Amino acid sequence: MPSKAISAVYLVLWVICCAVESAEDPYMTRALKLMSETPLIDGHNDLPWQLRKQFNNQLNKVDLNTLNTTHTNIPKIKEGRLGAQFWSAYVPCESQYKDAVRQTLEQIDVVHQMCQKYPETFMFATSSQDITKAFSMNKTASLIGVEGGHSIDSSLGTLRTMYQLGVRYLTLTHSCNTPWADNWLVDTGSEPSQHNGLSLFGKQLIVEMNRLGMLIDLAHVTVAVMKQVLDMSKAPVIFSHSSAYTVCPNKRNVPDDILRKVNETGGIVMVNFYNDYVTCSKTAKLSDVADHFDHIKEVAGAGIIGFGGDYDGVTRLPEGLEDVSKVPKLVAELLRRNWTDEEVKDALGNNLLRVLRKTEMVRDSLNGMSPDDLPIPYEEVKNSCRTSYGYPNTDDTSAGSINPLSTLALLLTGTLQALVALSP
Ligand SMILES: *[C@@H]1O[C@H](CO)[C@@H](O)[C@H](O)[C@H]1NC(C)=O
Ligand SMILES: *[C@@H]1O[C@H](CO)[C@@H](O)[C@H](O)[C@H]1NC(C)=O
Ligand SMILES: *[C@@H]1O[C@H](CO)[C@@H](O)[C@H](O)[C@H]1NC(C)=O
Ligand SMILES: *[C@@H]1O[C@H](CO)[C@@H](O)[C@H](O)[C@H]1NC(C)=O
Ligand SMILES: [Zn+2]
Image (cartoon, rainbow, N blue to C red; front, top):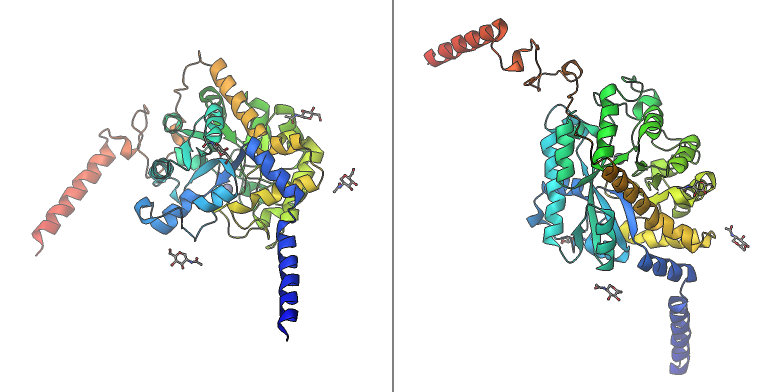
């Protein structure tokens, strides 16, 4: 080929390439502008669980600037304009009645450690004011949500202590019943109901969470629990990572009548991106997630919508939303679907800020109320790993008081030990 022709080919290629690159998507430009004005607040991210699974929480062995085995790392957070995150302090249901409380404390600790190790990226946050302050400093406000009532081991003292450590929401159950609340699997028919919603202690817990100013998270519970809490809570509720049941009929999602009740009570449903909850199948696209946003808006208004990606807690994510850096593309898609700037800003962060502020106001209005010190009845939590110290009139051998049975057990153990010591 003569060199002139080659130059012409290069010129054409250059024009195609650069014209495409500089033809900015006007929706993306607008999305990024809105995200610079209002923090994107995400309701649920399981990076702390990945830190346990992959590094046994040894943060010294991790560099969040280069970590590439997770949906979340610092460059992706920056690209995704993540303004605030509820980091999940999650431990599996298998730890219930075993070491759930310790494991949960370790997950709380790893979030604190992460904020200390990367102070230029994260600011530990416990209030609506902290979120706006972190945003003005270009940092990701880092809050903690405990995912699953099993993490408090049926103890209001443990709940209060976790609040002191900075925990700002409790998901009432994960995928197992607690001694005081039913989980969503009951609604699938795969598990029996134990409480028809909440037990008496479960209701005590709701009142105590209102008093403390801890958000009540209804992701993962049965519809009966949703209804009971929506009826009795003085503060609005959150669904930290749940989508719309009408769009994908999975029991982890929220039915329309509940969406309407969330609107009436001023709460929020933060949409989950997990393929299985988005399309009820193994595959999904970004536009399928936008369909959930559209549906919730249609049924209950843009005032109850938020983002709850469930990144690093799920294995399958939609095409176009593969990691936390991609969220601005979803925001652009909402604008393409004629969402107004106000509606988008509400979903980005203003709705969650409203819910958190209201919860803080309810707390402040209840500041004359004493902590609830009535423990759960012993019969409701009796198991071989639990002692009954403090409960009067229990005849359990682990109660610490000498009774004939435990005396007999001690004698037998002593005899056995003596025999072992005698043997060669
Ligand atoms: C991921 O990070 C590891 C360790 O830093 C590096 O060896 C590997 O090449 C990276 N993989 C990719 C796909 O970037
Ligand atoms: C935050 O980032 C914006 C845009 O990049 C910049 O204009 C502003 O000065 C930054 N603020 C702080 C406190 O660093
Ligand atoms: C609930 O819906 C009504 C009627 O559409 C609307 O005026 C109100 O702002 C909504 N509330 C919330 C919290 O979005
Ligand atoms: C957005 O609004 C425009 C103008 O009103 C309309 O032509 C278009 O069909 C709408 N798009 C969607 C996705 O609703
Ligand atoms: Zn979950």
